[in-house]
Amino acid sequence: MRHRIDPDSLTALPNGSGVYIFKGQGTLPLYIGKSVNIRSRVLSHLRAPDEANMIAQTRRIDFIETAGELGALLLEARMIKEQSPLFNHRLRRLRRLSSIRLCQTDKGTTPEIVDSKTVNLGATPKLFGLFSSNHAAKQKLNELAQLHGLCKVVLGLEQTSTRGCFGLQIKTCLGACVGQEARHVHDERLSAALIDLQVEVWPYRGPVELIEENDGWVQRHRVNNWCHLETWCSKTGQASQITTFNPQDFDRDSYQILVKPIMLRTVKVQAC
Ligand SMILES: [Zn+2]
Image (tube, rainbow, N blue to C red; front, side, top):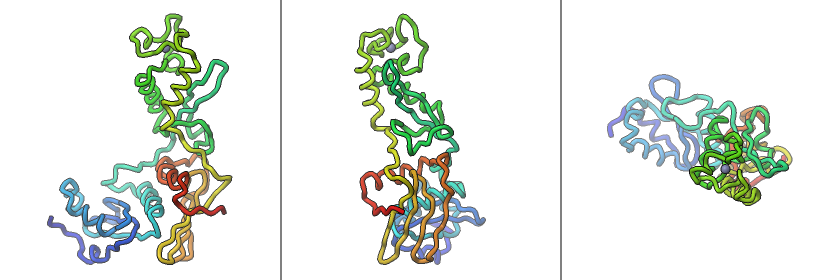
């Protein structure tokens, strides 16, 4: 493919992990991406037919190396949110996140829609799913009710009626609303339906450092409550501060980046 990208900027691309930035004629980035191998990932962009439009506008490609993959993921997420490149459609910052909380009442287990304005999402147990709105959370409950034969009256999605829910008439509800199905059986099925969406509670008492090392180069990512606070780098001896900690800043992308390495302990963690 023919392109008009500064050849020196291509030659300079390293084989290590980090973030790369496609730039056009202006100063604003066209696209920001991350890889464990910056060079090979950028070259595969240049060969991708469906990215021809972006490549045609690109004049140079910059990069920022990181000591490991986690650092690349965190940096990419942050830069995309700060700079909103034209060709990145993912990783939009969501002001408010909603979730489904399972509460115990005297009747049984009841789902409640909560959001990040009122609930500290990383520190509250029994939360399921991180949604962009209350409406999206409700939609998920409706979907699960349909899929698993749950009762929409019991789930609080429909008004109570003596004849049971609408689902009972069309045989999509197994009858928890009229006592055909025991409430505890229904509630166990509800919990099982939600289990894959469970939001992990931050497993430490406060902030920790996630340590990545590459050939003597160390980066320490300070994280609290699934929020990335800053990264200290041994090359510069300095920390780049990301944010002051605020539970309302709970960020779905950071959570998704951090949850596996922390829960599966595939990253070196140090209390701080
Ligand atoms: Zn029902």
